[in-house]
Length: 198
Image 1 (cartoon, rainbow, N blue to C red):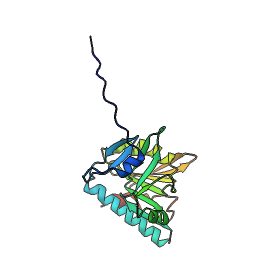
Image 2: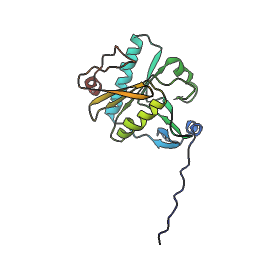
Image 3: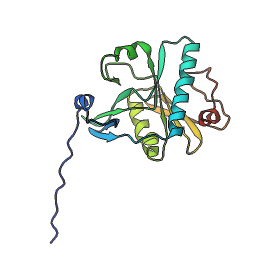
Image 4: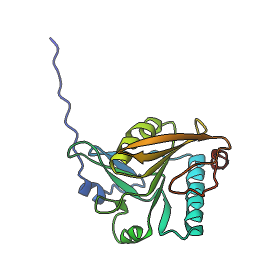
């Protein structure tokens, strides 16, 4: 006779609990389906890519005098996912309205449903995040109505620019010396080769 041992149910974390969560460590957490998921430490290359992208995007924003700001790894994005389950991601780079960034100065830096969705989010792929970046986040960011999502993949040496259309993302892939084509940044002069040469 086999005896089944019931596993204790995981405690679900609400979005409000997530915003207030502190565990005396430097660990960053994402909230996925009501569960705290620790983010792994990035490699130096990953950090160099995100820093470079933030600078390139901010330079373009300033050149065009746009009311936007690019931010590296410090802003969360609340995403709808499932029924009653909270999810909040922390993209590697977020481009958002400067006024809305100012509204987050004295509270948790998470773009909730009361704010506009980010204009662009960027995820830099690492071996531990590949499936999440290509699949789960693609669905979540589309559900949040984020107009543009870049998947920067140093493993495959390509950049995928995903543009929202009728609730789904259309994808164009760029590699080597291809100039990225971005509806949000139509004049941007940037190639995967330059992105990965950090």
